[in-house]
View 1 (tube, rainbow, N blue to C red):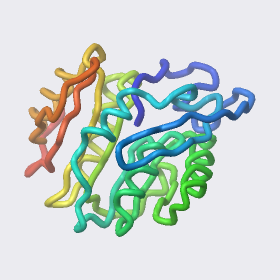
View 2 (view 1 turned 120 degrees about the vertical axis):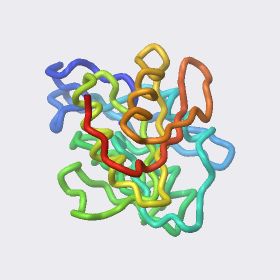
View 3 (view 1 turned 60 degrees about the vertical axis):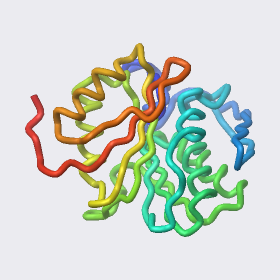
Length: 215
């Protein structure tokens, strides 16, 4: 999921399954030490005019690739910058680009194909295979959907981590990054701050050993 999202109910916003805004495609560039690419964007998708700074921090400062990883998930893939970079860095793995917005899913497919990648699977959340475990989760979560929805979303995905898996989340400080870290720790997910820069926190999250009831 990607950063600041508008309140539920906003017309054509980028958390809608089917945005109502008229299409107007454009492109944005992403430059990292090991990757450079151009991404098609559109109205009704997150970070239409530039790569979100939190997303860039996650990709720049997140953990290195692991040869043992087989299933990586970009939760809230948008038009695909995280998914494309993960697939580029992890050619041995399947990268699941999970996104509810149909317009963003199509852009993610286009951007994956443009990058020459064949290991990205773009799906809606309800297409996730039953019982499939995850080696790594990368996400810029949608804080503005509200705490109950956000906590439910994170619980759903963090509890899919394999025994040796991990999640890597970027959250803006002023949108409750520290309180979210405390909540994850209280729920049983060991959560460490990897980086704090440019108004963002970058967290590493381990699988929880036992289920804890949400308060």
